[in-house]
Length: 221
Image (tube, rainbow, N blue to C red; front, side):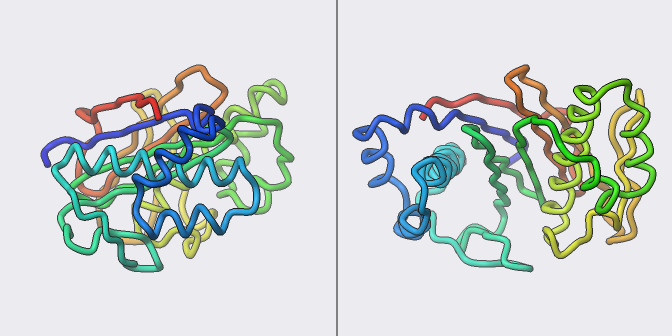
């Protein structure tokens, strides 16, 4: 594949029992088992929605065998398509999927008021100082989740996930865009953010491949 593709969807249509069951029987047995392990209906919808979104994304790439295995640090990957990388995220009622031919990470987070003690404890000092310069709590929460989505997308793109500490690298925000100061590896990373003005922040991080030409699509589940 030549393009990085990013998909998002809302899982609220899955409150309809018939629609839920239809999608449930379309996803893999592995995904159904994951859905069944969820205790709450909202989590079942998110898990099923993420699986359905991934199926749609992979089908668009000509993939019909969705068998999964685990890569480094347990990151899921396709068992029979080593050239296709993907990543999933969900929050609130939103699910997100990024697909590429190089390492990729994505994250979506619902914006809400946060205790900045979390940032002080876990973020890079420079990031925390920038947060403290915000004029009010609303601006500070918005920036917190901007940092969070960018940081988590990077952590997932490295393949380390939360095995990599949040304060082990620094996200740099400037008029020229987003970059990262890191010593995790020697790869170059690029970022792309999405603000759909829906109360969520979205971010994608790609290793060794620019995100300028990434294709974004909202799907209906």
